[in-house]
Image 1 (cartoon, rainbow, N blue to C red):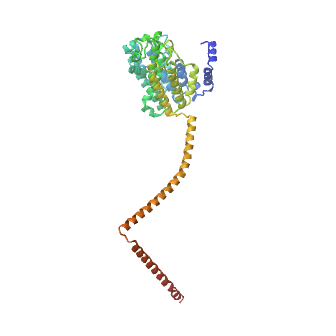
Image 2: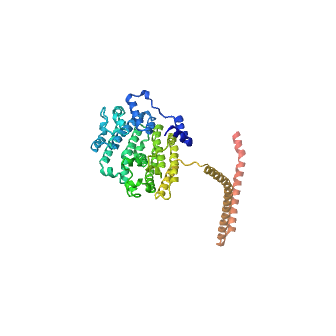
Length: 485
C-alpha cells in the first residue's frame, strides 16, 4: 500500500488512524527491555524474534524480566522446529530424524542448519541458530528443562505427521486428528508457557491442575489460524480442514474453491468457526489465573486478536481467494484493550461474539448452533461480570422504597393484630371459666355452702391476726422498763 493509498484509507477510516496514534503515543509497557545491558547473542536473539514474528515480538519484549529471555528462546526454538517441519523441499528421510533429534541438536555448541529451501521465510533463524544455543545454556535449569521437554514432545509429534502418508496425501480426515494436530503445534506451546508462568510464580499454580484450559488456549489460536490461512495452505497443497466437516458440503477439496460452490464453502467455514468458538469460555477462565500484568498482556493480546480474526473470517468469501487479516488500526485498538484487565478483555469477546451472531445467516445449517454458542459466551461473561444496568438499579431502588413504606404500614397493622389477639384470649378465657362453672352447677355443686365456708375461714384468719397484734403491743412497756433498770 503506497503513501497516497494509505492517506486516502485513513481519511476514509479516521477511527483506524486514531487507534494507531493512541497505541503509539499512550501505550506504556509494564516492563521495558534494556538493550544496553544485553550481550551480543541476546541482541541477536531479539533480532531473530523481530524477523520471525512482529506481533509476538512486541508482547514478548514487554514481559517481566524474569521470563523475558526464557520465553524469547522458547519461541525461537519452536519456530526453528516449525521451519523444518513446514519446508517441503527437505527430503522426508532427512526431515524425520531432524525433528525427533532437535532437542539434542540445540545442545550442541555452534550448531546451525543451512539446508532450508531459499524461499523458506524463517531460514535465517536456523542459519544463525548458534545464537539461540548460546543463550539457552544461560537460562535457569527449571526453565531450560521445560523448554527441552516441550521440544521433544513437539518434535516427535511433527515427525509422526511427516511420516503419515495419508495425512501428507489427503490431509486431516477426522475432527480427532485435527485436534491432535493442533495439540502438537499449539497445545504443547500452551503447556510449556503455563509451566513457565507457574515456575516463575507469575501465575496461579492451580492452572497446572486444569490443563484443559491451557489446551483450549492453544487450540483456539491454532484453529483460528487454520481457518484464516485456508487459501495459503491450498496453494501450498496442504489441507488442515478435516474431511469429516468439508465432505458434508462439497464432493472434493478442490470444489471448495470453485465460485459456483461459494455458499457451500461459506457454510463449511461456519462449522469450522463453530468448532473454534467452543474454546472461548476456557480461554477467559485461563486468563483469570495470571498474577502479573505483563504476563496477562502476553496471554490476552493473541486471544483478543484471535476472536477478532474469527469474526473477520466468519462468512467471508474472501478467505477462499486470498489471505485476510485484521487491519492495523483494529490490531492497535485490541492491544490497547487487552493490556487493561480481564473485564475489558471479556467485553472484547462479547463485542465480537455479538458481531458473529449478527452476521449469522438463518439459511446456514449451523445457524442455530452458532447462535447458541454466542449466547453461551455472553452468559459466561455475565456470570463473571454482571452488567450494571442503570434502569434496573433505579427499579430496584424504587422497589426497596416501596418495601420500606410497606414495612411502616405493617407496624401499625401488627399492633392492631396483637391487641386483637389479647382481646380474643380474654373473651375465650372468660367463656371457658363460665362454661366450667355452669357444668359444675348442673352436676350438683353447692356454691352457697362453698361461699359460707370460705367466708368463715377468712373471718377466723382476720380475728387471729388481730389478737396477735394486740398482745404484741401490750408487752412493749414492760420490755422498755426492764431495759431502763
